Image (cartoon, rainbow, N blue to C red):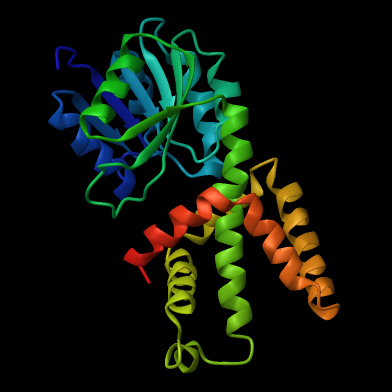
Length: 267
């Protein structure tokens, strides 16, 4: 790769940040990672860097971006790894530099990035945004471009709803039983559902809460799910659930065929 940029990762001392530190170094970049608290050193490092990536918790993102933006050079690139994209990119637009919102859709424990997804929200592209795209494509990561608004609307389902549903499933399942009692007589589907909920609960509670709390579209989605559950209960009591399930299945016919095949790998 011809370009060998200097990259600063703010928040790069975390497990997640360190993963990207190593990745960019493998492609010849000169990478510096600092914690969020090193403000004195931060200003000079920002001015010296070709790419500045903010990788901090969602609730700290706005503050850090507002501190960073005034020190960016016109020819450099300001980017972030935040799980939401609308509010960070709104702040970053004020930077004189290039601007790119990124959302890697994997966690720090994932070893192989092949066929993983990363969302790019290009705001002001330059050669360094092209460099980052090239790095991820070399790693066989799928780079998916969309607007920040589209990203957040979809993440209200892909992340916020998925997390809330998995946690609620596990919470409901253990209201009356110890989880190990249920796993003794578990079906493959039940086991996988509980594992998903357990994996989320084993993670950072601030992260999973923030993904739901800071997404402006999630409250509407959550209300829709509550409405659908109430309707499910009503149809069940009236003996009308089979017809409803057939209706939903017909709407998702092509996906159902795919799901039947792919689920064989895990069930």
